[in-house]
Every structure is written in C-alpha cells, then in structure tokens.
Amino acid sequence: MNYYGQPNGLNNGQLPPQMYYDDEATSDEKKEIRRTFNAVGAALLALYILIIVFCYAGYRAFSGETEYNEYGQAIYTLADTIVGGCFPALTAMLVFAGYCALSRYNPKELFRTDKLNGKEIAKYVMIVLFLQQISVICTVIMSSGLYSVGLEVAGMNYVFEHKPSVYAADVIATIILAPIGEELVYRGIVLRCTAKISQRFAIFFSAFIFGIMHGNPYQFVLGFLLGIPMAIITIRTGSIIPSIICHMSANTIASIPTVVEYFNEDASFALTVITLPVFLIVGLVVFVSEAVSGGLKLPAYTAYHKKRTFPILITSWSMILVTVLYVADLIRSIQPIAELPEISEMTEQAARFILRS
Image (cartoon, rainbow, N blue to C red; front, side, top):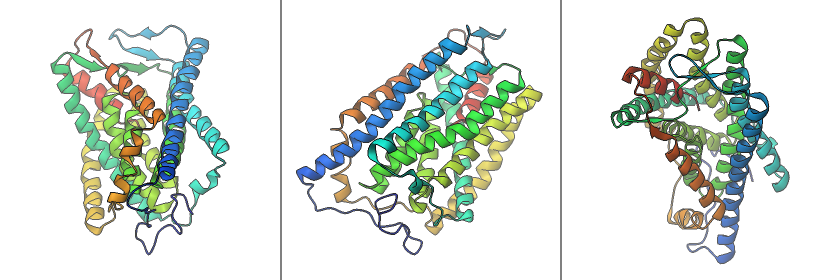
C-alpha cells in the first residue's frame, strides 16, 4: 500500500483506484473509520492547544508591550514575528513528529519522488497562484461588505518594524517554515488518513480544515481554494513535495510586496495590483487547459464512500470539538471597527493579508 492506501500509485496516468467496501459498513468497519477521524482530530487538537501555549509563553518571555504608529497600526517587532510566524510552523512539525511516533508511520513515504513530473508541478503552481488571485478578489468584496456594516477582521492592521532582521524573519517563516509545517499536517496527516476512506472527500475535507484553521474568513477562502489543487496533486503523485512547492510559491508571491515595502512602501501595493491580473490571465489559461484535458478530474465519490464519510465523521468527538474551536475563532475574528478608516486602506490591508497561507 502506498501513501493513500492504493497498491501502485498512478495507473497509466489515471488516478489510482480507491478502497471499496460492501454496500453497508459493518460495525467493526465503522469503528475503524471513526478511529481514523478521531486520530486526525486529536492531532489537530494537539496542534491547536500547543500553538496557544507556545505562542503565549513566547510572547510573555520575549515580546514587550505592543506599540502602535500614528495610524493606530500595531508594530510587529522581531520577537513578535518569530513567535507569531515561526512558532506555529515549528509546532506543526512537532505535532507531525509525535503523530508519526505514536502511529509508527514512516514519514519517508510522504517524500517519494518516483511519480514526480516537473511540468505537472509547474502547472499546479500556476493553478494555485491563479486561485490565490481569485481569493484576493473575494477578500476585497468581503472586506467592502464588512466595512459597509461597520465590521472588520481583527489582526490585519499591523506593520513590521522597519529593520532588516524583522523582514528576514517574516520571509523565513512565511516562505520556508509555514509551507513545510502546514503541509506535513494538512496533507501529511489529514489528507493521507482520510484519503484511505474516500479520495474525493479527503480533497475537500483537508482543504476545508486547512482554510478554517487560519481563524478568519479571508484566509479561510484562500486556504480552501488553494487546498483543493494541492490535495489533488498530492494524491496524484503520492508525495507532499509538490504541495510544499505550490505552498512556497504562493507564499513567495505574498512576501514579495512585504520585502519591497522595506525599500518603498508605495511600490509595495502597486506590485500587488500589477501581479494580480498577470497571474489571473496566465493561471486561467493553465486552469482551463488542465480542466479540459482531464488533469483536474476528481476521484469517484460513490454510495460506498457516502456511507463512510460524513455519517461517521459527525460521530467523531475530536473532529467535532476541533471544528467548533476553528469556527469560533473565525466568528470572533469579525469585530466592530473602533475607528473607521478609509475604504481604500481597508481594501489594501485585506488584499495584502489574504495572500498569506
């Protein structure tokens, strides 16, 4: 069995067969599937709790009182950037290592290279960047809608302290650590485990969890949209290397304006505006081409799978609990605007923030 519980990975370029069961799941089968969901939920709960603990301890130990500029924006120092950016990614790696130890899973399977194809990976990178720009448009629409009723998404209104070390720490956390840590958990645990039950379900389920764990509606849209193609190529190749590359590419595009901002603040947002139509057009061409050629074809989702996914998922205590926590965080992120800024400022902050996954 390979990464997804299939015998031999790809079959003549087609998606591998899935595990099919008898029409009605037996009691033992339901228990086994429920254990799978509980294991995934327990890993996510551990990640959720440990991030809170480690980040709280880190802020208490290394970060001083938050300072604000004349525009009321929080100023992120080096300590803030390391704790808020690096700690969650490192915690994800720790949780993944713990999961592998407890389940006796060999993580080398996640990094297989026998099915990798550079051309296919490049196509999926462009699809991910295309969907990233779609999420920017969705965010601008949502931001304007929230603004019109006096609401905003908390945590967006910040700037980095103008020091090279702060920007360097943000780039390391965003481009290197976050993609590796998050892919290990959301494609390496969530997708891998649930794909053994149903690949199509696993694709959308892992994308949903990846989106909602970000804790705000803007990045939920981003994470969900990007999570779908990253899950598809992970299933097609049996490796998380392509999804890590896609994730790094998306976060690199997100970090370029931040780096440019260090030298020229006005050019930063202008660069974001310029790149949006470029990746929209090029990415759309690639997306349509792949869709027409069948490159984005999803695995089957039959009556067999339907009886073994949602009906059993909703009986998993750990998945219910972690989903409630994620949803609560998302709802709490929407707050009344204390002081109404210009709509252009709101849109700029939202567009820049959404790019990060």
